[in-house]
Amino acid sequence: MTGRVTEPQKLPTVEYILKKGRRYENPLFTLWALDKKRTPFRSYVICSRKVDKRATRRNLLKRRIREILRKDFAKFYQTSDIAVRIKPVGNGKKAIEFKKALTNVFHIS
Image 1 (tube, helix red, strand yellow):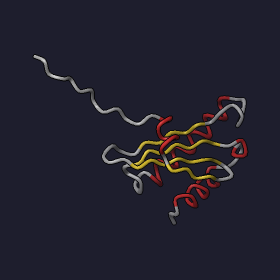
Image 2 (cartoon, helix red, strand yellow; image 1 turned 90 degrees about the vertical axis):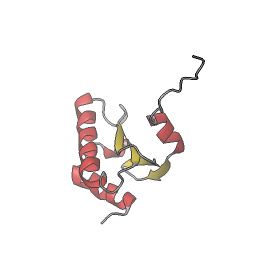
Image 3 (cartoon, one colour; image 1 turned 45 degrees about the horizontal axis):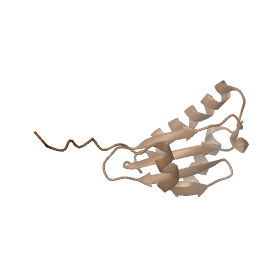
Image 4 (cartoon, one colour; image 1 turned 180 degrees about the vertical axis):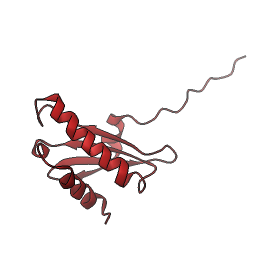
């Protein structure tokens, strides 16, 4: 058999989303959104050591934002990949502040 084997289609990586996605700036975070054809909603949260040196605090921020994206925005953006990079100003902010900021970016009331 001299057939050509095709590889399965790879899903976009975070680097691809950061390069090709639409970018939205906010005082608390930077957000990239990439629309896709078929695959389901996925979200990535990036939180560097500049935000907080303690991993437990960074993980808490990431969990808060992931939960907001999962509950409130996944139903509106079912075929999107979203990457959120938290800025150092976001350290110590409450979940409701992130939710208001994300709502403003997405224009969802």
